[in-house]
Image (cartoon, rainbow, N blue to C red):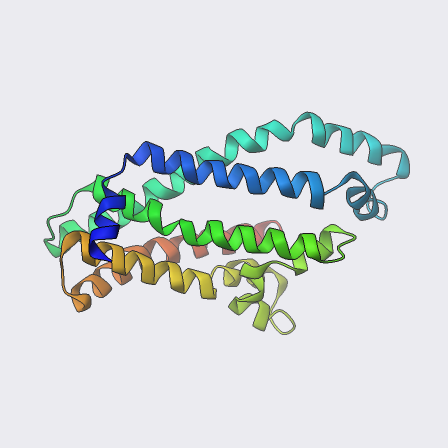
Length: 219
């Protein structure tokens, strides 16, 4: 396991990032082509906007679809940089000798979990009878396996989105970071656990605060 991970970490970081983006682009293409079809969008918008404007809205969506393919990699890159920066800062305070680039590659490799989740979610939607955007949102693996799903009937609506962040896959992601950091830095499990908890935990806490603020502001 250690030799395998070390061999992956030796790969070029840009190549890892390109592979990750390629998978996400493929998932986005399948979703937009076979799941979020014109008929589904029409049924979803029929009760929201006048019938005459629906075709215009769908046409605009097709026209500007490429923007999502451009913005998504930028957002993902920023996410990787922020997570790596938080973990690197934690390493500095804890006195660990590991560089930013090594931590970044661990973060990139750990992202494979969310790619698998995206693939699984897409397959589930393809095999399900979805007729509206509401159906698509209800069949989201990340949301289903989250605290937000458990409290959705009793908690205020603005709290659901932040609590969706606390899900089963986020826990597995944390464990992947711990294992990757431990192998890379060659530290004991207890030290790497504390290291990732304090650093990645800080990032996650700030992200939840931001989501909570946006949910309250635009609720």
